Image (cartoon, rainbow, N blue to C red; front, side, top):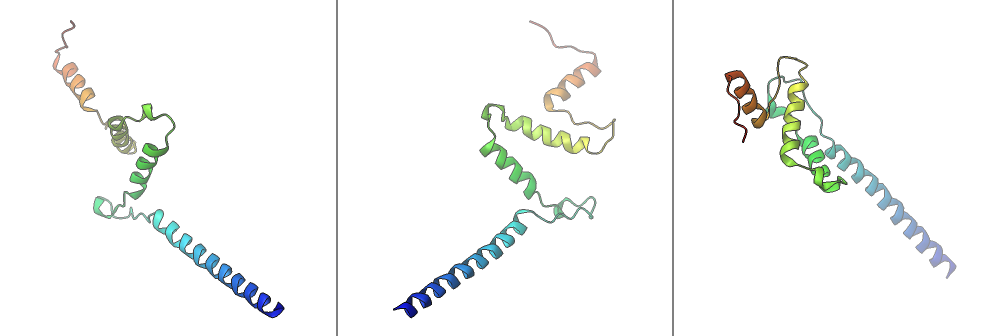
Length: 116
């Protein structure tokens, strides 16, 4: 009776330890998949850039951001593009949203919107 109990306890302990080891290894494998290995060495070749991080952050904001009223998809999109252009560090290169571009063209052409 006592021998069966000890054998069963040893068997259950071995299964638990084995399961724990498998779980840890699976977790490590999934963690490596979740953080892509970016290769930015190929300048000018966007096909080699993995945008997983961008889309993971985009989705996480949509799902978990506390103030959903602040999540304007269009503003987020233009902000991402603006950040990409700003990352160049060139003061003469800028991204303008379609609205800003229209206003800029009006200013440069000398015409102004009619106020009603």
